[in-house]
Image 1: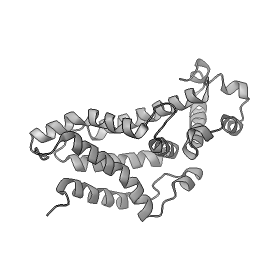
Image 2: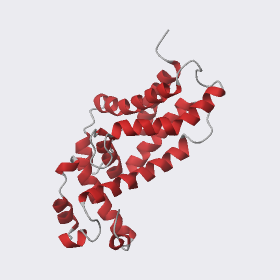
Image 3: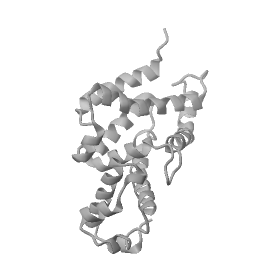
Image 4: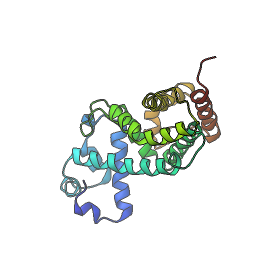
Length: 218
C-alpha cells in the first residue's frame, strides 16, 4: 500500500502518478515493467518514488485494489439494482464499464492486462479467482431470480454464472476481431480500449444477452 508521503500529495499529483503507473502496467507484463521508466516519465528522483511505494509489487497491489474499487462501485450500481431480466442487467453493466473505460482509459487497459494473467505475482491465477469470486457474489442474485421464475430452475446456478462470465470474457475478443481493435495501440495512445460508438456496443451486447436468455437450442 502507498506510504504516508504519497497520501500527503495533492489529489492531482496522485492521479498523475497513478495514471503513469497504470499505463506502464497495461502495456507490459509485470516482470517487464520498469520502475525506472515510470520514474523518468514522472520527472522524479529515484529516492523520491520509494518514499511513495516500497516496491514494484507494493505499487502493483495498490493499483489492483484501486481499480477493483471502481469496478465494485459500478457493479453495485447496475447488477445489484432490482431487475426482472438479469441478462439485460448484465448488458447494462458492460455498457457502464465501457463508459468508465472512456473516462479513465488507463484503468480499462490495466484491467484488461491483469485479467489475461494466469500466474499473477500478487493475485496468483487472476482469471480463476475472478470466476470463483463472481460465483460467490452473483449466487444470491441468481437464486432470487430463480425463485421468481425469471430464469430456469432446472439448471445449476453455478454453471449459469460461470457461463455468463465466460461470455463476458469472450465478448472482449469478439469485439476486437469484428471491429479490428488493437488494444495495445489504444493504450499507447491513451484511447479507450473499445473505441467504437456506444450504440454499436449496445446492439452487440443486446444480441449476446438474447442468446444468453433464449439459448441456442430449437
